Image (cartoon, rainbow, N blue to C red; front, side, top):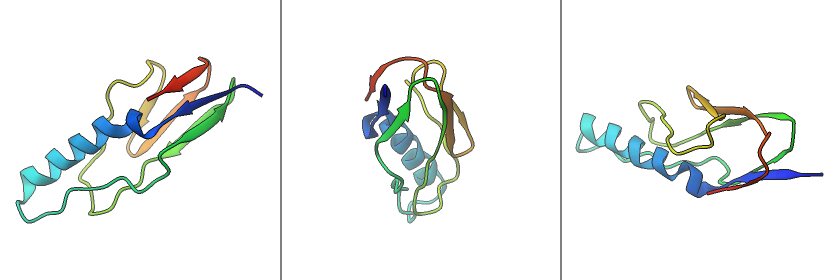
Length: 88
């Protein structure tokens, strides 16, 4: 079985954006922290969906610097693993 791993470093830009969104709304608000699993292992050729969960009521989600095929829809990353490798 061939697998692809997306790690927590792949999601780090999301944490920074979430922190900026929340701090712009209220200085008293706590920055969101991602609470979902930090690593995802998928089977090559099969589609996957990864739900991003965070505490402190984030206002939204955005992701940058991901492999070109991964789409972010609301709080979910969606793709079919067609490239072998580890993404950090």
